[in-house]
Image (cartoon, rainbow, N blue to C red; front, side, top):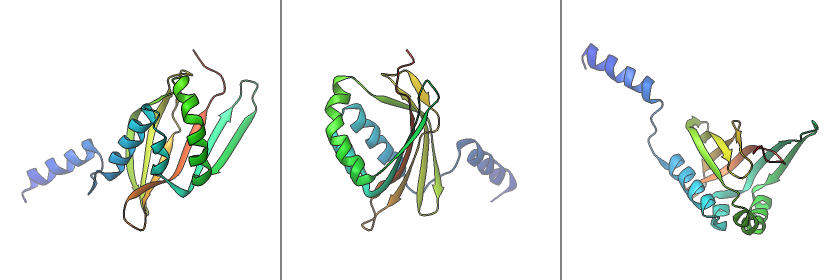
Length: 151
C-alpha cells in the first residue's frame, strides 16, 4: 500500500469514527427507538433480566434521587406504563448517537430529548452485550429525568 493511500485511509478513519465489524449495536438501538416511538411493549424484550437500569432525577427544589431497577423489574414496569405513556404521547427522540466498543460489548451514548417534557438528557447511555446465544441485549441503561415539563 502506498503512503498516500495509507494516509487517506487513516484520515478517513479519523473523520468517520470507529468502524465496527457489525452494525448490530445500531440495529438494536434502532429497534429500541422504533418500538419506543410506537409504544410497543415488546421493547422490554431488548433488555436482559439481569440488566441494571439507572434513573437519576433532580427536582426543582434541589432534591436529587437515583432509582435503580433490574432488567426484570424494568420490563414489568414498562408493560404497565406503556399505555399511560401512549395516552400522554410521552416519547423520546435521540440525536448525536455514538457507539463505542467496550470490553464485552458496546456503549451507545446519545442525547435523549423528552418530547412531552421539553428537555434534553445529555447523559443518556446504554450498554449492550451479546447473550449466550450471541444476540445483543441491553445490560445497562442510564437516563436523567425531570418531574416537571420545561415547556
